Length: 180
Image (tube, rainbow, N blue to C red):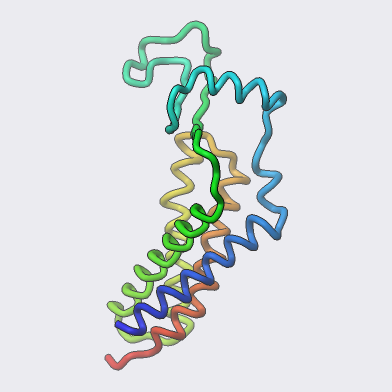
């Protein structure tokens, strides 16, 4: 139980740290995020037409009745977006993100404890492949269904692989080789 808890804490901290480096220190995410030509006009339009926070979807047809086409929206146009109205308190988001990373590290640590005995690098590889699987299962559907750009999608997957490979170095060490 002690190894499980320690690996969750330290593995989560490493994955969280990588996220901070990836998003704040490196400039590689910036080119994958496009900007509106007139952000003020878009913000005003969204505020006027999105009465509450949530996930919004705009399609040229009624998604629950695809045969009913909306003639005032260009064919092929789609917008998938999130609207948030509360002020952003970065500390709360970061603490929640740290908790999510620790939960992920806990699950990976538990997985390693349930697998047959394996060496250090095999344990690290399990964490790396888990990051790849998470990216494939979560980010490729966003690319497929919501038209996330390929560069954004591939970078998000790479981010997960790097984060969980680095965290895996620590998790694998703390979990250690147990007797079979």
